[in-house]
Length: 79
Image 1 (cartoon, one colour):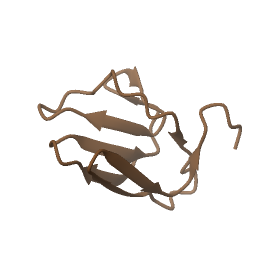
Image 2 (cartoon, rainbow, N blue to C red; image 1 turned 180 degrees about the vertical axis):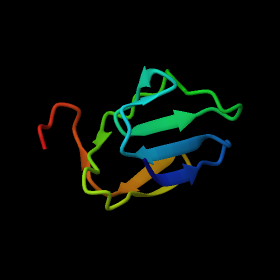
Image 3 (cartoon, rainbow, N blue to C red; image 1 turned 90 degrees about the vertical axis):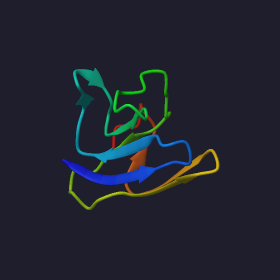
């Protein structure tokens, strides 16, 4: 389930929500798509989205930054 979406200055799309993969590739609730719609497999966000309650995620992208407001955790955080 998708709960957040943002577009950066270079046309890449960020997706957040309750999902574990995008087109069969691990994504842990956060993914970036290239301008052509393919998954950016080189992008390593360093965090995962933990939106089990479906509260949603807000994101703002631009100037090289992605700001996330929502249930974010480190990849090894058991929450």
